[in-house]
Image (cartoon, one colour):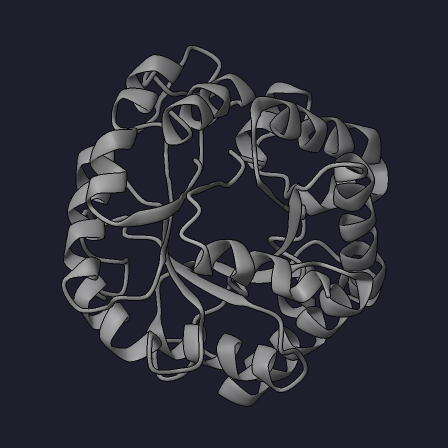
Amino acid sequence: MSSSRFLDRLNSGQKMVADGATGTNLQTRGLESGQPSDIWVLENPEQIAQLHRDFVAAGADIILTASFGGTTIALQHIGLAERATEINRRAVELAKQASAGTDVLVAGSMGPTGQLLKPLGPLDENEAVAAFAEQARVLTEAGVDLLVIETQFDLVEAKAAIKGVRSVSSLPLVVSFSYDRGTRTMTGVKPSQMGGEISALGVDVLGINCGRSLEDNLKALKELRQVSSLPVWFKPNAGLPHLDDEEKPIYDVTPEMMAAQVPDWLAAGARIIGGCCGTSPEHLRQIALAVKA
């Protein structure tokens, strides 16, 4: 069954390459800054598919669907909540078409809702659980190989997401946090705290993605490995961006600079390596060469 291919590779000890950034790459291809990539699943699907194909050609073993903001709660912000099923299903179709005829796995991307859960914000936990369950159901039925709850920063929301996923799907599950305060999330969660609490909830892989500098993300990786023996998914940013004259983000970490860090990431315990914001197909090509050296 396709749902076992990911775990088979993990259990065999294989080091895998995940893809690079979705949003920042699509922005270089015409997506307006601040516009969620999910819109292009409907309005410009060929660009989504081409980015997937570029990552496959660069050496990715896993590509993520363009469904990061695909919960009904997140889609409410852009007036597309009623099209959530269509968007998630189409995102899977595009990824599967781009990877057809290869051994590349398709991971269903599930990002935050965009709202804080009680007591930090207005969102009720049961609403979050239901929204994540609905997204996971559609992604699973559409045929992804695994699910990735990513860019999390709040333990309450991450636990709601896991609960929602596990109520509808038995697919392999990655849960990845973003430490955008260095080695803390925006709500103060430490990698050791995340590892201690999330690893006991029936997940298969713990992750670190986005965040700040490569140095900070490596520190987070080392701290996470101190408390958990689960495999680690590691997709750091291509460094911290600065804005050019047109207010567009520029990432100064080159593909070669990023690839040079791969041995340290592997030594620290990362098993699946890719990149987040600023990671182009060329960055990923160099990362893949280093992972598979």
